[in-house]
Length: 134
Ligand SMILES: [Cu+2]
Image 1 (cartoon, rainbow, N blue to C red):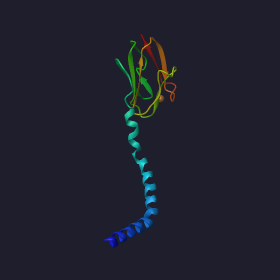
Image 2: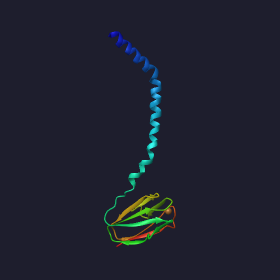
Image 3: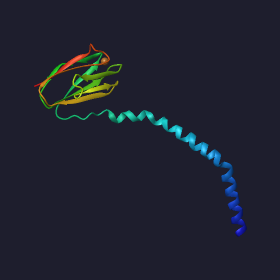
Image 4: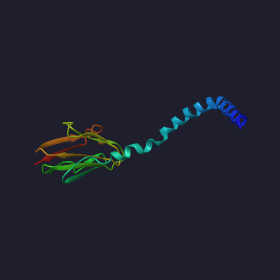
């Protein structure tokens, strides 16, 4: 019995001694494969935090379609990029909203204070609109 255990121990030590270098290498290459899961990261960000009634503005053909609207205080506005390229929804008051909107994604803000708020796309300065809050 004792001889068998001793032989097993020697075998284990021998195998471990020979293979430990390649085990370390295998662990090293294994961590580099973690980058392959990147594609799923951005998906949870599609739903902006908004409340109350929602007015929708579509971005199509390098334009905010009916991008100038009047709304009641407490209403939210949601911009959805249905265009072929990237745009931004950028207010002069960046606290309201200043966001890159990728194709198929949305940005939104809730307007609680009456006033006129102009915005534009920073990439295409000719794209403008005004949200009038009553
Ligand atoms: Cu744009």
